[in-house]
Length: 316
Image 1 (spheres, rainbow, N blue to C red):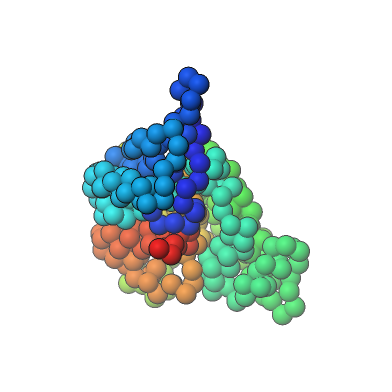
Image 2: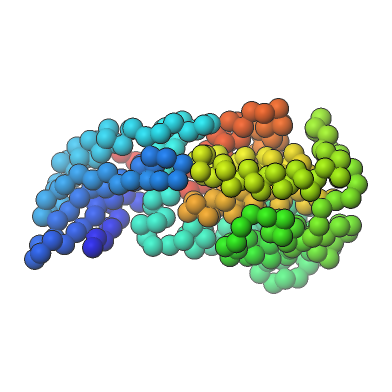
């Protein structure tokens, strides 16, 4: 039996932990780091410290040795080993406090997420107005009714996605889209579109509505295969990009894709990510790269967004 103790702050980019184990009558200490060795597996690398935690200087030497030992690992399809190592440190820092990624999110996450995901789609609510809508469930003076409803819907959709433990299928994605578009002007809520659509500002032309059901079923099947072959961040971005490219709904495609992406992250014990409206241009550029078959840009973009939102370099 072992107990993990915090060594570096949870916001450190490189996270290791001191682990205390009891053997017989004595406790022994190890410095530990989790390393991902395949898309679905991680392993712990340990260095024995003895019956007492050593001095700071000696501990630093052990940490440097630990970093060298953990430099190996598998090559991601689109992410570098270094980036995957930092992501694994972040994932481990959540797990070591026995929290689920959903529980470990900052208290203001839902407000920031709702504000940004809706602002990307044209909502005029400010961050402060979004906070008021979600806390009081009332419309701020001068706010558009549609924006207020969509903010409330975003909160409902997030709660549904966060708790959902089932499989990725039509019922799930349609339920997400329904929660996002209920009580709005969206013509079809909770089902695939029945007409052609165009994506404003994009040269990509989505498939005909008659093609959507088969393409979505293919997407669900691809998820089942790819979750064994891709790093979770890569998997999340691939599914996001594929769904956006199909554009299966009359409205809510981008918001549904971002919730699907975060559902995959949470399922793999990574924290959810806010795509900030300030990064909208780069976000759209990554999607355009994906439309042309290049998934790397978005995978790196998402990884960097996650690290930027949950980590910081500690002073030396």
